[in-house]
Structure formats: structure tokens, C-alpha cells
Length: 103
Image 1 (cartoon, rainbow, N blue to C red):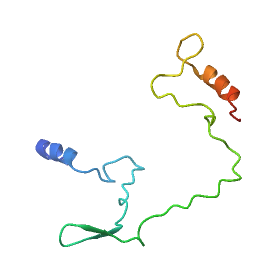
Image 2: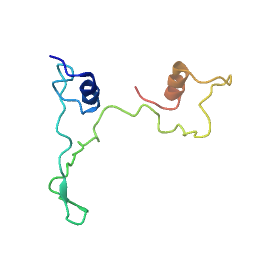
Image 3: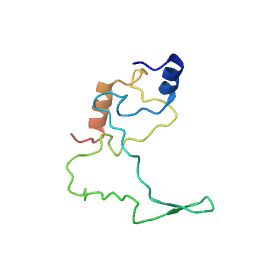
Image 4: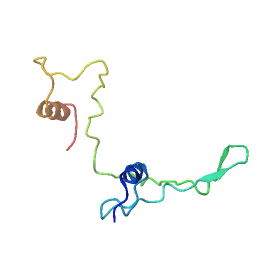
């Protein structure tokens, strides 16, 4: 049994459900309420419900940033090689190693 053509168009505009999506589609339940609405239209945050993420201690972390700390950021133009052409990946890695980048 199929729905009528106008009903099929209306169904396409509705929110996707797990029965209409792919076999592994999981809709989820949003992010969860982190507070309550007041009767005057405001919102009060309940700090016990706010998610907090604890960053691990990175002092002994062996990986380094991909950009060397001594390379100055150029905001007005792209990085160029000595020939004046745009820098490709190999030139960038070469310059990064010269500036003190660690692998």
C-alpha cells in the first residue's frame, strides 16, 4: 500500500526518522538540557549539568606542532618560494625543517 502523491510530498518535508533513513541511521537525542527555562522567557544554566572536559597533562607529550614556533605568520599573502611561485608541500616541509621543526 502506498500513500497518495500529495501525502508523499508532505512526508518528504517532515523530519527524518530512523525507519526512513539508512539501516545504520541513529538520530540521537540532542545535546541534553543544561538548565531550565524561566516563566519570563529566560534560561538559567544549571552548572552541575554543564559538560566539562579534562585535558590530560601534556608536558611529557612527545608530538610537536606541525608548524615550527619560529615561523612568522604572514597574513597578507601566501607563502612563496625563492622563485616567486606558490609553495608546494615539499618546499613547505623543507623550510619547516630548516626553521627547527621536529619530526
